[in-house]
Figure 1 (tube, rainbow, N blue to C red):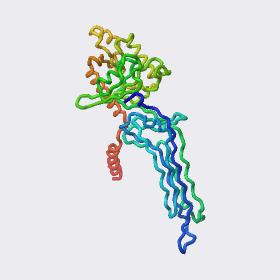
Figure 2: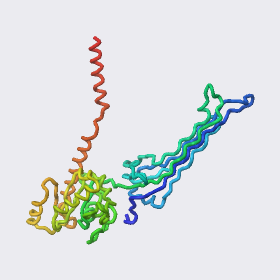
Figure 3: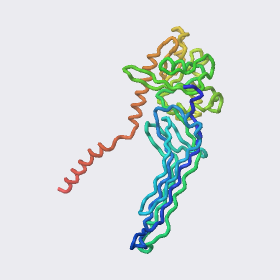
Figure 4: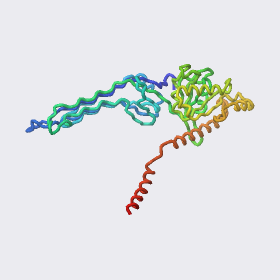
Length: 363
């Protein structure tokens, strides 16, 4: 995908449809000139709906579609006929899309599953016809409700890439090279900083036809959380990653200091990122002999799983995949353990016991 086609932020105007007015019609027929109220309800105005699609990876299709206007509902008719609902506007978006109010920044909804549909801007409710207002003391109500107006609002759509592994590192740390080696992705690679200007996704093949998704984001520099370099524009893409793979070049003057800078920038952007499982890859290690590698390893944190790799020399690429896969399984197991237990089976098992106790007490 060309870099200028990766759009992960759009601002759009959403106008839902106005509800149709209720009818204040009275039944008329030969021999019955003064029939009762039979006005139908107005139709609901059209919604603006977001639908998740795994076939989309960008918000490019919305970049030049700034106004979404749904149709109004039709008015009610005689004989209790309800007006037709306004046609909904359904917009497909990539998985991981978050919608926010443009004025307040408040999160409205997020799309995370294929086929998931959520109402972004609801249409106005249709008005009730005069049939709803008849009573013993008011048998001929000559009024009905107007339809509710639609909503006119500006909405921001942000894309947060869904990936299993997020690559985190300084510019020119070898992230794009690794992604190009382990997947079919073809990110731009060059020997200068900020070669990667947009995120890239790649599907990594693993043993026994298994796979996982890896995301490469533009490099982070010290002060990114304050807007330096590419700032925090792309840091949101790693918020949904299951694990973070930190990548630091072996020729770094101080690997530990660089690692701490990366952690600090992530913490300033979102402290919850530090709760994610972390791995460390020392890149370009084909330049090291065994003695230098041992010296560097002795200075690294002992509680951080580390592997020395070289994408160009294919050094320790498979052990890196094994390490990532093991971390992913641990993460999934922890997530499953933290999920609320299913109550249906437990409740079914408990209910007979309670019934038996009641019967014993009665006896």
